Image (cartoon, rainbow, N blue to C red; front, side, top):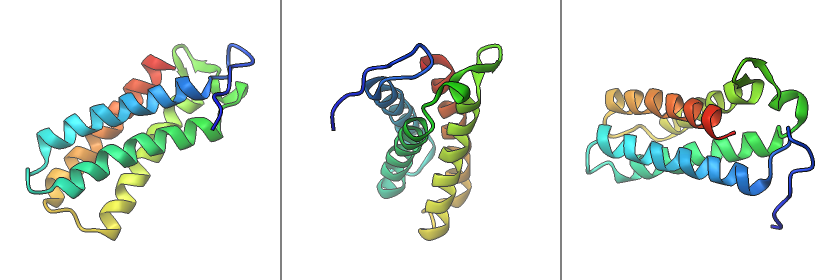
Length: 124
């Protein structure tokens, strides 16, 4: 897939979005390693991959000026929406495959969602 160069200040390059997604995935991985049992490696991997994928897919598909402009100072519609998709992806995973420790998974999902918000606000 070719890298897309930003055509305006409010449109982000594919590389920039990919970096944002990667940072989200790395933070979600750290959170999952911290909160989930060591034996729950499928859940740990899923949290990292799904968090990164949700941010990448949302930011790529909604990469348009009206959604990237800050409605509130420092916060765009996309900054708020990407973490919602992170929460949805992680919730769907938990519905399809029951996590090893549902209580800790719920904590992990909440923290990964907050990390997704922070990364989206700070990096984009």
